[in-house]
Image (cartoon, rainbow, N blue to C red; front, top):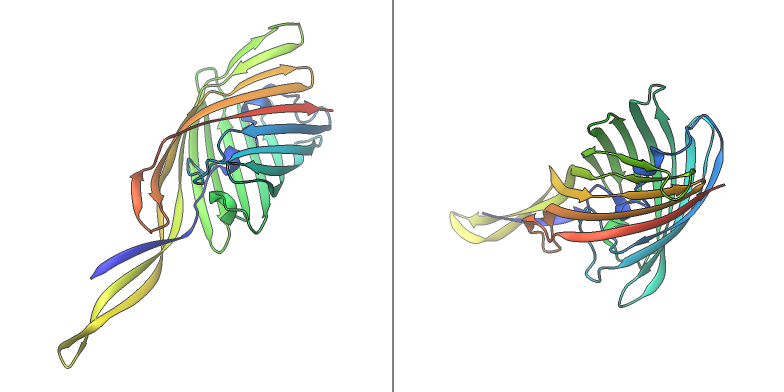
Amino acid sequence: MSILYIPKLAIAGLLWAAPAKDTTARKDSVPAAERTTLNIGVTFNSTLNFLGRSDSYKSRGIYPSIGISVRGGLYANASFVFVDNSQTRQYAATVLEAGYHFGSKKGDWDGNISATDYYYQQDIQLVQSVIRGTFAASLTQLNKIANITLEADARWSSQIDEGLQGGLDHTIRLPKIFSARDVLVIDPTATVYAGTQHFTQTFFTEKHFLFLPAGEQALTTNSQLFSLLACEASIPVVYAYRDLKVIFDPAYIQPMHVLDGNGQMTAMGSRLFYWTLTVKLNL
């Protein structure tokens, strides 16, 4: 008997390497209860990827965004993703996110709950384009030595996949770099991602007729596997001056337990270095 694995659904994790990982920026933002703000920004991503898994063209991405943060922690954002590679330049997707950001009065806990919808162009060919929506919740314990973040999420398309991630980071805050109203934040971070993958198992069994071999029969079943998906190291750098933020985030990611188009699983995928640059203005 032989077994063939055929992947059915791309797996879980960090979409677009996040229309800007904004966790570091939040640590130096105005507390949620103080005011309502309109946010506009643009992000450039050197290699669009999904937990280190990228398309064969190593597509780059640029996505302008607009959002609103309401007093009390509620927020909503819209991002418009454009893809650039050796074959095409095109609008790829609209990403809508709404959520609630909260923190303790003592400043030792920080959390976020969000729901995201993805609207891809039908002809777009990106690893992450199979996912139609996500729901995520995270909690961070803040301290002077190392902040500890735990996050759980669910992603859905034709099936639902679950994901978990854990991270450690240490925030270095340097105020008054060029003026009395600016700050530089450096946040070395290590993150581990785990989650489920859906695939089909096709078993080839030998048929018999009157005790004589009569060829092979294919039996197909659906399966789900929970495994470690990627490890990532990054060093987000945030420069903030009044209501302007510039976020540069270089990252090195090692994808793990990768299912390819032929249904074969590789314990270690190809390592990827990529970076994002975001300019964001709060009005």
